[in-house]
Length: 227
Image (spheres, one colour):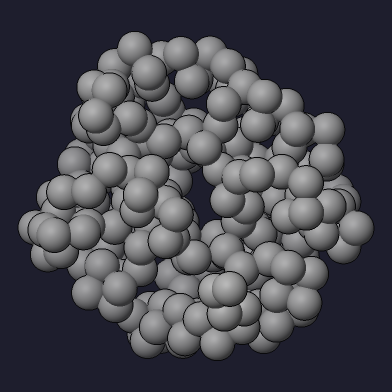
């Protein structure tokens, strides 16, 4: 199984899975997304007990590593750095209301073998936050919210100038997040963004696997060729 950082370098799509579905539905969704080729999953459950969240993380890791053993999709845990360490996830993702980036980095490093570091993602809403995330050794950033979302309410949205500035200045993988739909991939690609974190546009689709493949195809088509 390859280093998480190497897999992150190739990850253009992160699907946020959770949202209160039952355990069987969660497992089916994860399996469908893994089989569709999704390179990264974020387990994001806000309203279930800790032991159930731990079960979801274990299920996601088992499905990812069993169905694609040579290069499994990354599985990161939203908010819960301690639980990500406890369950052996590939990393954790923190936001403004969660653990400070520097503290999350320390805890992940303390629990990680040097040959297989755990990833740390940070949601950022302006350029200063993105700079601090980089300084505090985040491995990637979420940038947004880009558009109104079906899963979360926002008071303000990211300006195109901010989104483009992060891509130009911050030497970290940057995932656009917030209301991302297939049609909006083109708008964001025009700003230089080629990584996307997506929730309901995939997970609430009639066929999540087909929706994920459509995103992957669109992202690949809009990505500039390597020099």
